[in-house]
View 1 (tube, rainbow, N blue to C red):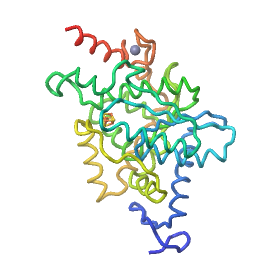
View 2: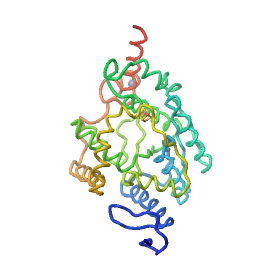
View 3: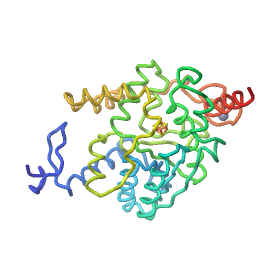
View 4: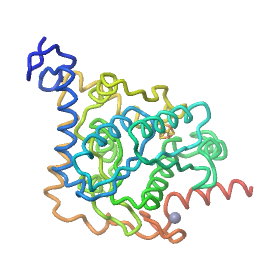
Length: 314
Ligand code: SF4
Ligand code: ZN
């Protein structure tokens, strides 16, 4: 099969529109789609100092690489990588290694933050202290990990003076999050998935997801074709994720309906166009303890810290 654009040897055929690409045109379409997504949702300004959360997984490594190419056309902007060490034994070190390696190779400034230093405890200790899931512990490990990662990423973005924080969430991640919020009936969170970065609280650095229209399979192929090493072994806590069921549904259904995730994400965009203003009930409050953004009186991070102290004092 020949590349649809130049007739060269094909390396990838997009399942949803059957277009075939050679390596050069595959890389070009990846970059163009990210640029288009950034432009469509007004994600970046010309002079922005742009922070990218880099875990060392395929999504963040590919995003760092593509953004370093795009950024060359905007000399007034700057990139800075933020790497978070959650503290997961026999797992996290490898991701940290790849994240640092790529930032150094691309000559991108990077900073490492950790749960241990910024929250006081690493994830392994938190999970051990909270106890067994379903018995003593209410949620899966990923819920606690997500609460702290979001908070520390934001703190880090402020500390490095970033105007915007980019994350590597891809098309299927976004479709999953949309479906999960619908399944939980959490319309406040659904509405907050607005892809246009907004200052929803004085303490929050606006966020954006330039890969929200890029399928996971293309990110894997991009890493493969460009020899980008990334962490492939799964996190030991991933088996606890509720997301797993929804994720399975998406990937299974997508085999027969390749446009599924695009339809879900575009569906949200269309819904948001109908909701001209974000209802005030979905706005964030100030946490009564730390002053950071909170959905209720206490932010989730302070709630977790209190919970751990209570257990330690038993
Ligand atoms: Fe954290 Fe869950 Fe990801 Fe592991 S799989 S790093 S626990 S969010
Ligand atoms: Zn707080």
